[in-house]
Image 1: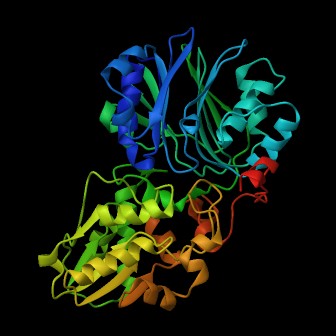
Image 2 (image 1 turned 90 degrees about the horizontal axis):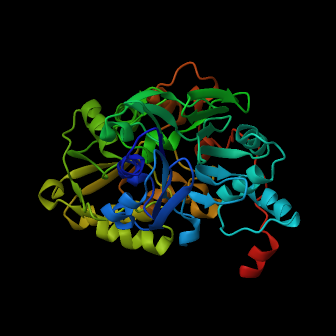
Image 3 (image 1 turned 90 degrees about the vertical axis):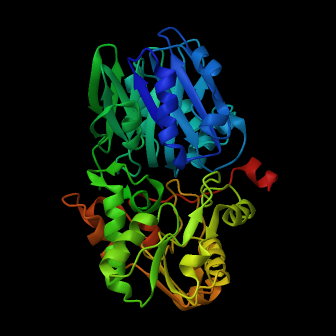
Length: 457
């Protein structure tokens, strides 16, 4: 997500901000702007470049804007954010990252009260809660709505005359504030500020509600801060290496994860290679710690997106085949230590091990810079059942056999916490590790299908 307030080229700045965040979602993109009188939006399926051109951006005139790139979930242009709603009392646009764990219950209650939904997103549930609130001020409407939702949500909302920012009480998804000239901006990752020449100011605190308008920035709270629990996969996989999360540089964190992994793995090899792109930093750290040369043993096709966030398993498998190619002269006749950030379903790892051996590697030792992912995520990562997780159903040795590696090593939970190095943020160093430990920072609601969902199935 990206938002900006007080800039004459708000749509163009948002376009560039979304470019920096393209790695977070490739299914669709959208931008909504305000000129102080009305909201106007454009959205479409595909990459940011596919959706927007100069003509479309020129048509989005305004001094405030929010944008979003869509990751996974149910397809359809209606589900692409920002969601835009018009009513006699004013318009509202919402962008949201994360997942509301009680969205089904709330949606059912709202439908029983007469609400009609146009999308399958939990973001629309928030919009209905805001609009149905009995409070007059938008700030109070938002506070009231957020008091009813549970789960992970970093939010950016836009009305005709203000930009509203909120972060869930546990801070599960990254969100920060920057400034470019006299304009304020907000982004899911700090790397977006570099592209537009903005200055990072600070992270949005858990439970915080911030309103930005022509009078300036106004800080408030809708909830007391809970146990700080930033998603650990942000450091391991999702975020770009040039971003900072809670004061920790992602590249540095990943490099430290690789160093710690080398200490724990103690594997003999001739060359270390990383799986592009998110594992390169960890592979460099591993090679430095182990004293083994780092080489580009795998080359990524830059015109293929991230395979983990493909919406179906069939597309993920096809994406792996198109995405990576082994460098034969690097791996041929060598014992290769292949560093990857995680194993979720095992599809990618199996394919890569096979490619390396077909290219002449005598041994392939797979080293993972995170612990085994044994539990589903209910906060926005596209893994919602134990059945999808190879580590939830197999031992490490069984996984090694399935992917065809000569050895398989995972980083320990303790090593992961030590490597990322967060201090002073309470339990688990301020990180959510539920997918590794099964200890969720919030209550978990049963995901009971609604009646119409049962009929669809």
